[in-house]
Length: 418
Image (cartoon, rainbow, N blue to C red; front, side, top):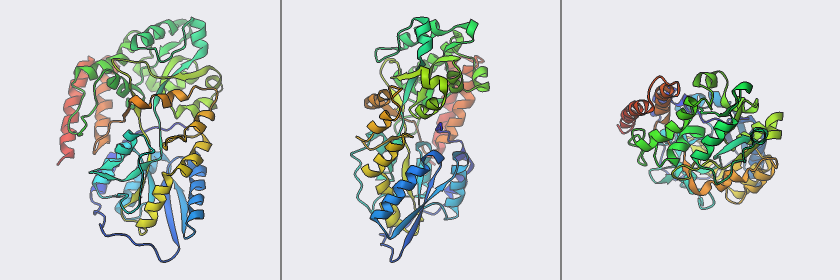
């Protein structure tokens, strides 16, 4: 199952979330009788692993039973916002980066202050992703990075060397040109209009930024960000990528699976998808992303967080801490669905797909950049799509779209601070 990080659902319930009262600061006490915790997740493929982890926690804590509750991602945050406002959200639930600050800043989440947590075993960027005002609200559950998926058969036919860690932007563009074959309806690359898998990576590689570290200003008016955007629009202009219209009709990853695109910037989560497709299972492999002015790939991961109004704050925090343990990470790794965040437990995930060089996703960790977020990420995610579509379709110059996007984004970020 492909895991996407679309956060548009946030905007629907922002006002409702804002209305939630802040949590109590009193020290929680242990429940006197049996406890049943609810645990909210959105990926059905991970439910067996989550249930196995819940059972392991129950074995060590016989007084606490955990019920795993599945809500599909398309409805997850909408229902969560309604439930949180009504005081009935799951005791512990999955959280992603784009939504975290909104929930933390509105008192929906309980910081992990009543249990001992060790953040050392996780990638630092993921640990910081779930900190708010100096407090740790969630331990990283898993993570993903973005790599360069490619069709080996296309490369062999064109006589092009497979991508490796020596590739630069120039190497990539040269290969895209050689791999493009109009007679076969084959494009060398896909310039998809997405942040996480696409232009965020090249903006970072160009030395730019999407949002400032303090979350108060946009980076889109920086020439380096424009350079990162032009990396993609130049591919479309050179006809080595499908047009924006073609990629709207058929998603780029589907074109890659159909053998119509030779190179596709995709996530580590695509390993499961590409294994389920006969063509990509046999012909695809993956390399690190090509290098721009510097190396970069976007890293993101989920965490487990505690509902501030749970009746069982201490037990819920203990369960959240267990979900971040090495034991829980090893259970996750055995399923091959995601890369566990706990350092030293990722080898089993790599071994689950021996046909792909998945180690490349892990080798990019030293220079990985966190997925850009702010207090209300969804608001400017929508502005990104609205403004950059004009550049991707060729209706407007990239620098003009980027300038207007920066203005819109700065106005939205200013509202966050009020």
